[in-house]
Image 1 (cartoon, helix red, strand yellow):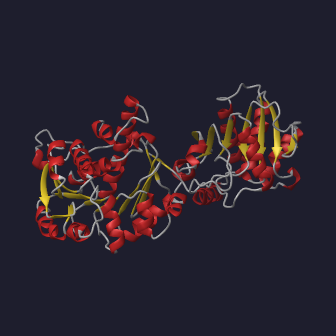
Image 2: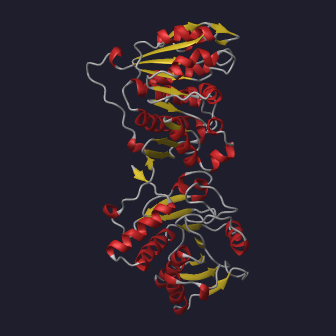
Length: 489
């Protein structure tokens, strides 16, 4: 497992490291530049002409240092200066001066020949701390870089991408490879920044891990998928009994997919509480699950289902509610005992929307699994607010609900008391109806097998993503259905 770091924490950690050790900032810049040059060699020949687009701050200094090293290793370098070299200060000024002393051309951004003849471009305009929209000469240069068709290596982050959120601030460079330093930043892993980063290389710049005490979200990888061991003498009664509350008229498939996902993920027993209309479909399509028809009105759970549902909860190790449940009148009253239960539980889909409209809070031992629209309703925010800062949205939800939050998206964000994780192992093949129902079932199964909610959320997200990739490998990105994902678990 890797760990990311927020830009502000990275800057603070670097300052503390240099103050404690006396390590010079110029040497950190040198290590960063060496990593950029190594990346360039993956795209062009060692004697190629490379244009280094350099900004005014430390990121620009990385660019000037890389240009010097490229020249010294036998390549041809030209620096495209977004800020006048004489206006630079500190380490950036030192490296710009060295470039000038070596005869490397320092050209203004407006010079039409600045990118002429280049085989590649190094983007060193802005680092991870950018907090304002890109404009003026910087925006014009970014447009030229993107229009060039040349391979671009970005130093630290594609210029214009917010290092904390992945948002594009006005415009941003589209990189073939990004070389970031010490640890990845959330902006590399969250969209749209993830799509602009290209191949991500994390380079060592000389800070020993033992001297890095900075916080940051975990970055989940396939190797982190650790499922609970099953004893040799296990039987269905020792592998957990999950109660699913799902389905309504026209949405019986959601209950089926959730139940099948739970069974494929190892729940010893699965019972589905459903509306009468759902029962025949569930019994024929998920016949390894048990089913109980609840009092029904208009094809959905009636308020009178609250009592039988409460009885069904006895003896269960976990609950999973919401897929295809509908938001018809009466459903909220039917599931209220489940929402208020102390059992470990997953709250998904329609159950989330009903919870948002009611003001109910789920209590401890709960994982909520919203997509951005559902998260926006829970936060009384807009979808743009959530997608613009999914880490902030997930953190706010976890604090407000006192629950584990699994915020679904191109990059899944998992937030809980005392921790956060980013899961960027998914695939667009999972962008299909019912995929989230399978995930809810997997998550419920892991809870009923004894995993703590935060751990269950992490494992379910990884397992579901891996199954999606396997289905894509077999069928193609457009052909995968949720049933295929369930079959690949």
